[in-house]
Image 1 (cartoon, one colour):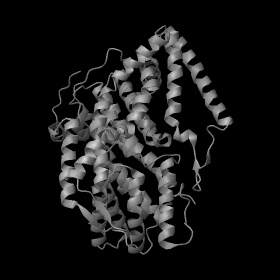
Image 2: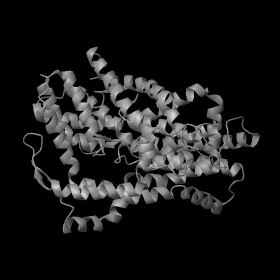
Image 3: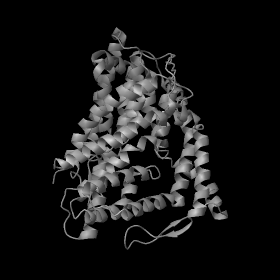
Amino acid sequence: MSTERKKGFVERIGELLPESNLLFLILISFIIVASFFAKGSHPSAMEGAPNYTVQNLLSVEGFRWILSNVLDNFRKYPPLALVVVGVLGFGFAEKSGLLGTLIKIVGHNTSEKMILPVIILIGINSSIASDAGYIVLIPLSGALYAGLGKNPLIGIVASFAAVSAGFGAAMIPSTADGLLGKITQDVYESAFGGDFPHDPVMMNYIFMFGSTIFLTIFLTFITKMFVEKRVESYDYTLPENTMTIGELHPEEKEALKKAGIAVAITLLGIVLLWVVGVLKSYPDGKGGMTSPILNNIIVLLIALFLFPGLAYARSLKKINNGQEYIKMTVDAMRDIAYILVFAVFAGNFLAIFSHSGLDKYIANHGAFFLINQNIQNPIFLIVSFIFISAFINFFMGSASAKWAILAPIFIPMLMIASDNQLGPDVIQVAYRIGDSSTNIISPLMTYMGIVLIAARHYVPKFEIGNLISLMLPYSLSILLGWTAFFVLWLLLKLPIGWG
């Protein structure tokens, strides 16, 4: 479908960026050259910590490592296994027509004004289910908007902003809360001694609960006021099998009943696995607990899509034997061919950057910069740290790995510089705000390829530059808006968490 609005300056700049895979090759070349100039041992910004090393990739050994690890880097690209295995459930459910029917029901029974905030609210809370938001919600949001006869890019970019930029917030504590909280606890006890004054899991809960409500309203506003207008400049094509919102046919209702029975049986199977102990939490040997349900949430979700999808397709006579199931699954697999190519270049870019040591170089230089400013006002300190975290996030992907580097530097420094007016709970919140806000415009965002697949389903020539240009208003708004919300929260002296 064509649109009349001309692309703005940001969209035109985005289109100047090269094709995704070529962009990663350019970035890899830049890393190789930069590693030559930054090579060697460097002091850590954390007092008493050992030096770190930047590897010189512009050398015989450097090129040997790059060439020897091309296949390994491809295999280790984080979303690759999730996407490929996910096709068995999510892709099949789409091709069987089950997802389309569910979208018809949601669209028909939900007020059009409520669809966007509901998508955003679910996206923000999707961190509870690990990375399921990227795999499930983003493509589903595009399909829902397509069914409503609207530009699917609206649903895709809004859900991406909610899932990724809103990753730090949720109404229920997630594994990220426990992981970051444990790092904070270890750093505090190591630096200051004594017992940690907070519950590691719940130390940010009250603020993050409030942030979920704030971000839902705020992202809905940003989408309506800015992003929808930008999206209008993109022509899109709806696939032939796109379902429009409306009443279900009798045969669809019957098939949906059988899919519902399949859901019930699958859930019963999951409960039985918990009863016999397979899915029960158990000690991890390090003083914590391992949750098989959270660790295998994607596999469980695949089962909840696969078996109902089979029941639905069988009821409508879309598949009658195993061969037809394989044919439909192979058909779904064709849709992810792009991610396989993307993974070769993105996976190697991520691995080469990490191996170079430039991520630590940038993180430590960011820390030195803040230390040298000699800021003592606690509000200025914490806001400066948010912006430093947002900047460093461009160069380091994993939130927990990044916090493991930054926490030993910034927790003691900010607590001492503020005369203990900034506690470890406040500092951790500041990190999460900065880290979340630039996720959606960072080339290190590992799920960027999944978003591009969803978008190219409707806009075949949609590239990473187009995506970044659409996400930029979200990123800047979240960085500034969420920071302002946090500062107001601190000035009102509201509690950050429990325990």
